[in-house]
Length: 362
Image 1 (cartoon, rainbow, N blue to C red):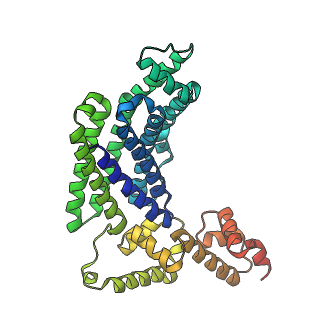
Image 2: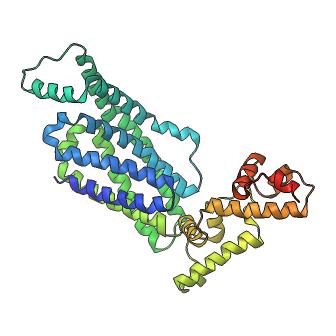
Image 3: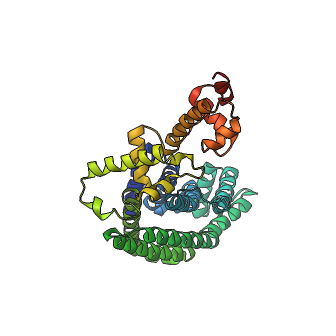
């Protein structure tokens, strides 16, 4: 029962992030939370019925699938938080272990039949059952798949993800300054140590059983570290607040930041940059991208990308009014859109007609 505590702590954290990030429409948080919740529910189910291990074939399958899918999802989330960009396409190969392990397990489970398998395992234990012909092969494939999942694939896979996590945490720490940086460094170091320990356990299953109490304690510490790092990501700016703003009340500071956003958008026309991103704007204003996103959502009731698109559409209309003989391509380029098809699609969504039709009406 000691191992239940870290599972439930992590499950509570993931449920919180499902709610908080779903509201802000960040798919990386939502997907990560769903996979984490699935994994820890399966983990808790495993522990609660540890005496009937062989009856948990389906739970084991979902646990393997969720565990392998959780790793790259967390990596994608960290990459997105640090850079404001989607990860490179080649990193999607990190989902391959979950696809392979999950597919093999699913085929074996469907082929054997869950009810029949549980019944057969019960009778096998009492030496009163002869396995039907053809089942032996599926059993061997299934259990071999579990061994490969637990030792070879999971070990190498977690090592790969651990390296990326170290890199991304270091990148985050480098951006931080002030008193919060020390706590972030401590939590990141503890996270690396515990992750290394878990990596060893994934290879040596005997140690996993022998160190049940230690693993429970480390699981709680791991959950706390995740909570602290997550809190830092979602609430603290990546660069320190300037000294002249430190003593300004929070409400006034928020209004000041909103004025800066409007100034850089309306007067400097920052939205005309084709490579504009929430991350680049946050760096320009010396604030946190997550905080800036939440502020824009609250003030304008739309996402940052929708806010930029509205600004570009308004500029495009004023540009066409001033230059009625211009081509749609020229308008798209002048308004900051990446290409003419994107411009036409967004314009029609906003105005109900194509830009060419709108231009003809002038």
